Length: 210
Image 1 (cartoon, one colour):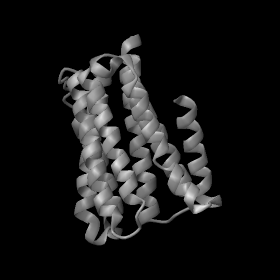
Image 2 (spheres, helix red, strand yellow):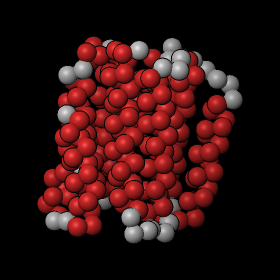
Image 3 (tube, rainbow, N blue to C red):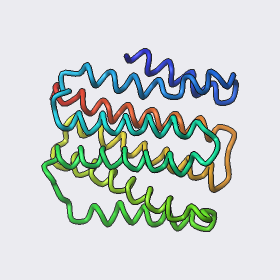
């Protein structure tokens, strides 16, 4: 599974610029499918946490497939990713036994507000959609940090690192869609996206080797 995940992600990232288009579309969902398969074969599959993460990966896969269609796909895709991030957040906070750090939500949500205000002038009709996504994304990041604060394990480290990189991926995508783009912005966005998803998936596998 590891080879499939890494190889297909690498091929997809390369195909963004070099093509052909069929290779770009064919390879985009493969890494997430392989991650789901990896978790289904994991000894941790019976844990509620594993089920939340698999649900999140499955919703992310649907979001990826929806966004492969160019016409009006962004709005629908974002809705699936919001649902995926909600699954991750619920998984993190449940396994953290609802741990709460009083100052943490203010710091994380404050960062989200700053990001929203930065992009707001260019959002147009999508400002409410983006605001909703940022709230869900920041909540997921907050819950992963609570998981890490509840117990600094290998699993929680993978979870929080994956969530941080997922946030970075979202920022890159926002710059590409609403700000100025660079030559390799799409490659960076997909590289960080796959890395984040893999780390979150690894947080499940790591539970059995605590």
